[in-house]
Length: 140
Image 1 (cartoon, rainbow, N blue to C red):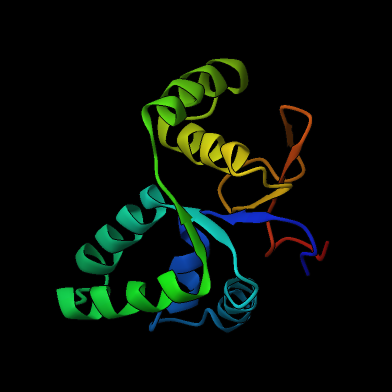
Image 2: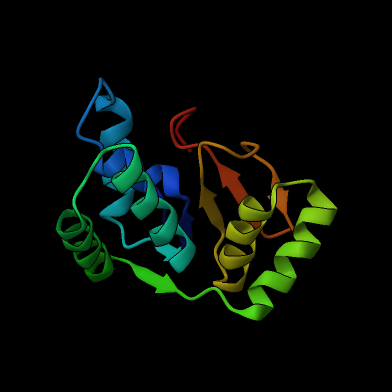
């Protein structure tokens, strides 16, 4: 898989820690990505915490324990005012939602080559340097 700096979207983490359903292929791919020291932002932690609590009925101790583990095996970057300002420009230029644009801005600020996401346009190049890759669609 990746040999470059890469960022992961919240859907990757959700698949990695999902406990329900027949997601074995997606889960394994997500776990593999997570094991390769990805970069993610505080936004990703917030989005996943909300999903784990609201949709999966996890307790706060379960969420905390999960993210204490994630913090040890990944690099987490903060969302700053500069990130937000860049997200507005990305949203305007590429037509993504604000929250997707914020993910893209965080990945660009982190000098990532790849953003792994199931929800954005697979194969699209952002600002001539960040490629969006759906890891569940094909092998790259």
